Length: 90
Image 1: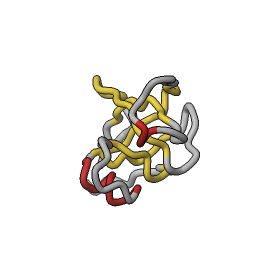
Image 2: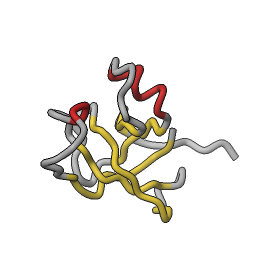
Image 3: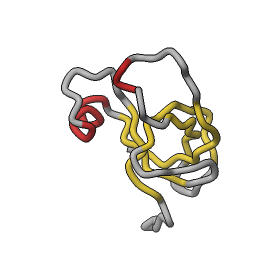
């Protein structure tokens, strides 16, 4: 899992059937202090997130398939929660 910021939406008219009816969002990875990292990815939205939201990303295929109850789906990344704050132990 990691923290990310939603930076855009993804529209695809031709896609695998498992993605039909699911919102895809472009997410920029963040470090624990919310500073942007290099990587971005596309994730399925499960929480009604929008551009600008700081979110929790599940980036592991087996867990994603279990959450969506899709045993043989080609799914890897899901947005699974909003992040309000991070408290770092020093």
